[in-house]
Length: 303
Image (cartoon, rainbow, N blue to C red; front, side):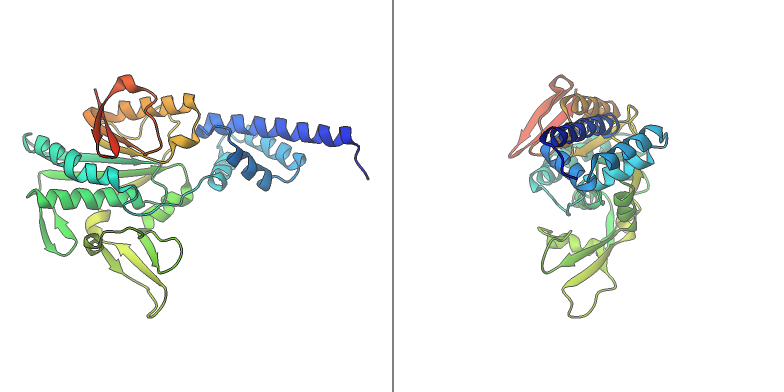
């Protein structure tokens, strides 16, 4: 059957309306903003309007949000690696952590450092923050390294690093704590500082192969936990957090969702706590923070 030009136009209009309807559902659930990239992905997933109509109906009836969560999995890019965007980590190592450790040393009782890697993807950022914190504590005389990578903190010191993500698959990979290094292609270990390899054990690698597998040591994993969490939730997963990293996620959100998330992060922080956004993100609620500029990055300190 040959379609007339009016029928073709009507189908195109129907498809556009359905995509707009689905984008509204994605915005309400995950804060996604309508973008050409997201729309192209939706067009590849749903080849005709009837598929899209059936999916939208299923989503609107699904109180568990399982169908929508599965779509978010397909639309989200979890590609990341250890020690990504080094400017923030340098500021963390040389400015934020030393000041925080000095402040904690003046406290009586248990001295607890809490760090949150929000939208942590497959866990590389959260583990990076744990390794960086342990290494900095050691350099400042807090703790002992009995064997390479095995740092033990004093009984009155606690380090907690929380990694959260909206993706069940990503959180599952993060909890497994197993990562690969390849001689070609993308690797979790690109731009990796050699001194931090002591926090890994090589395992299950084939001799002479181009891929090596590494498991993060218990000395790191015991300070790191992962949970499923949607940043659009009004209630943060934890309170009194000292440092929050929320990088490379707000760029996918619309302005309204960005403000909601920033306010939620602010509620989760200690007074004077530090927030790190990615180099491409802007602070959309500036009245909640003071800016501390360090080389190529900005540390947002809670007022």
